[in-house]
Length: 392
Image 1 (cartoon, rainbow, N blue to C red):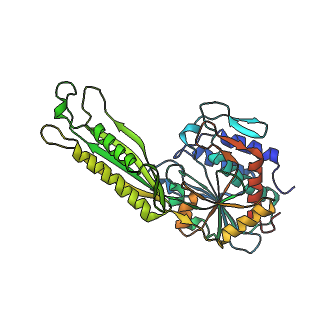
Image 2 (cartoon, rainbow, N blue to C red):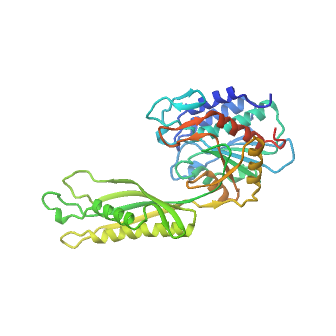
Image 3 (tube, one colour):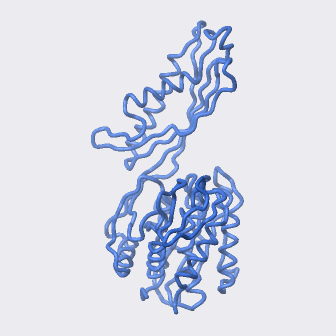
């Protein structure tokens, strides 16, 4: 035997799925990983955590977890990555095994296989190497934090702890043979709309409704094709007004509304155009809504780049190695470009070109999420091939 059995790894995965770990609260997941690694022989010297959470806008109590192994064979260092956090809909999940699927027992709760399946792929690979003394090149295992809320762990990882990897592989959602070679870039915005409060029954004409301004801006974006899926000639992108907060009573003209929005595109210049159109619509709407004194609303917008788009070249060494591992597993590699952000976005931007692979997750971020168990085991076999030069 030179690796964990399917039964052992399934048990490990079920335990990981049951651990709470929303973005910023990954400590229990990291503690579980460290306990298992130490039981397999990992010393404290080769296990490190960084301070990525202290540089994140979210804060949090846990940084990235890093396991760094010296190689038994001379070769370039390889990096294996997966994120520890799950989205809020997965809080309190109770995983159940039904045939060849793992589901959430509660119909109102997501499973969290995104990305505990990826965590288990890395952990089972590291445990096999440690327990059975398998030959391997220099390896770094990276379990990141806060991927789901802006890729903050990958953005702020302490690169000096990674050992200068030359090849990098990230496990996230999808099929095991799917190789994600690029992903879109994302920009997030906070929009503050200030109107003028007044009594909605006694003197509504003296008020300037921040809600009305928000409605006009949204209508303008939809009408002119700058909301949702955006297609302008050869250019494509998306935008979404995802969160709106405002108002306290029906008898008061609302004077403050806050909106959180985003814009995405694989083309940075077109993403910037989407952002400008959003800004223009809100400022135009603010000028339109006036009270009897001639006062109008005001809009302030703040934004930041969450992650930049990337596309790996077809001769990228990590992509070639991943393709070979998938082929050796008896599958045909499928190359795709993602419309969402991945840890690979920031790793690539920071000088570590990274290809992403799936591990059997389906319907992620929903209550219908489920994990294809045979696909998960295929993913971990691919991971072990990538962690070993002999591919066995």
